[in-house]
Amino acid sequence: MRSEKNYFQLFSNCILVKGANRATINDLQRNDLFIISNQFCDIIEGLNAKLPITELKKEYSQEDIFEIDKTLEFLESKEYGFFCDIDDFSLFPKLDTAYKSHCDVTNIILEKESFSLEKIQKTKDIINSTLCESIVILCYFKIDEDQLLKITSILNNTTLRSLELVIPYNKNIDSEALKRIRNQNTKLSSITFYNSPDEWNIDFNINLFSVSYRRKNIDDFSFCGSVNKKDFNVNKEKFLESLNYNSCLYKKLAIDRKGNIKNCPAFKNDFGNIKTINTKKIKETILSKNSFKSVGLINKDSIEVCKDCEFRHVCTDCRAYLSESSNIKSKPLKCGYNPYNNTWFQN
Ligand code: SF4
Ligand code: SF4
Image (cartoon, rainbow, N blue to C red):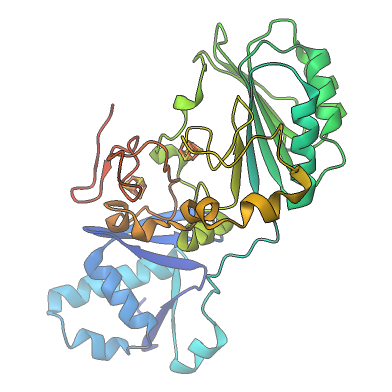
């Protein structure tokens, strides 16, 4: 039944993103994405700006008005928005879209090509001095339970909220060993075994802990940077980060297999080596440099092609593998989506 109210607004957690051909409503509360036409996106933007529905309809044919009514009712039924009175706008303030993080580094990627605790100890200093919340440790060498226990033990008592391990398959690390490793550090959120003879997952029924086995081998960082529909994430924090900054590299720090400090392990340029820098002064000596920060400030609205994509704030970005290698603002190489005809190229 059509509402008698003459205004309509989206809930403040539902954000419109307009692309070249079509748009999305991004529901940041329910982690949900809904595709609409650009014409309807314009209509909702007008209504959100307090245009009365009766005024809006003057611009449209009877047939269009029928469609507008139908779609607004649909959006209300799905709780993306609601019919309201003019006074109701002040009761529903717009979402603050600023992105704030108290950390100097939010996430670290650490590559290791051999076992040494010195690099882990120094990484721990960086974690604590930057209030870093998550780390992915990627090992290129065969690592055993004892070595994993030593690493996870050192990374106890840090600011980390999540620790992910990506390691080669080792048949000697069985379920009991995995439990012992997880018990050593409860921030351990996932272990991924690569080069596994088969693909499977283990569910330990432990909150925020997963173990997976994957066939694919990893011998360098070239596996990273793919953009896939299945990885779209309508998470409020990630969405706001993407609106304001680079969704992969903002406040990211990488330590590559040789110990070089970078924005990403696949980047060529580095900012010193973990063996020689004073890790406790990394904020002053590296993180505050414009040359380090600049890539993290490239958001999707400034990237070619992506700026016309309706998914630009729910996909990840990649500045290492580019469609034009000498253009830092070109589209990610490993994305097959064309926002101008809305098709995915499968490679
Ligand atoms: S075109 Fe750009 S914004 Fe769109 S899905 Fe691909 S990488 Fe993301
Ligand atoms: S820039 Fe690309 S390769 Fe580097 S971490 Fe991000 S997605 Fe991966």
